[in-house]
Image (cartoon, rainbow, N blue to C red):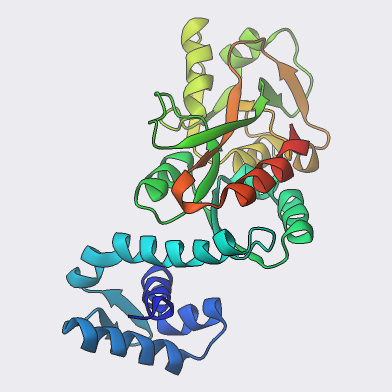
Length: 286
C-alpha cells in the first residue's frame, strides 16, 4: 500500500472534496480519485461517498483515519531520520487566530529560510479545537492558550509568551477600571474559552458585574467592536493588538491574569531537529 495514496485519502477527507484535495497536493483531481479507488480495491470497501462536488468519508474511512495519518507521518519522518541535515516533509501546525496574525508569519518565514523543503500546513482554530485535533493526530503541533488543566505527559510543550489582561476602551477612562466596568456596556471575551476564563476570573475576584452587551470568542472582532464605541472589554494584550487598535486605550488591570501562549507538540510526529528549529523560530516573539 502506497503511503501517497493514503495521503490523498486523508486530504480528501479533511478538505471535503476531491478537487480541493488535489489543489492541496499539487496533483490532478483525476489522480486523487484514482489513488482512492486503488485503496478501495485493496481494502475491498468504499472509503468515500461522492455527492456532487463533495466527498464524505464512509464509516470504514473514519475507522482507519487515525492510523492512516500515523503511517503517512512516519513515512515522512523516515527521510528526516536518514538525511538529518535535509529536513523535509509536511509540518501540520494549528494556531489560534491571534497567532495567525501575530507570531506565526515571522516564524514561518524563518522556518522557510532554514528548512526550505519543509511544507507547513496551517490549521486555524480555538485552543479547545486545536487540542482535540492534536489528540486525533490531525495536526503535529499547536500554538494555543495553555490549558486550564495539567498537560498529559505524552505531549511536549514550550512556553512562548505571556499576554497581560487589559481593559480596552475607545476613550480614556473617567475614573478607574472598576468604574468603567460598572457603568459602560461590556463585550465579554467568551468565559467558556481558555483565554476568556481569565477575564471572568478578574470580574469574580473583584466582585464586578458589568452590563453585558454580548459574548464573543474572537478578540480581534471584539477589538473592532470597541473601536466602534459599542462598549469596553477585558482582553489579553496580544502581539497583533497594536495593528488594529490605533486610537484605542489600553489600561492594565494588574498582574495575575495573564494569558499564557504555548507550543504544544506530539513529539513522535516531529523530527527533533525540526522541533528545535520551530521553537527557535517562534522564540523571537517572546
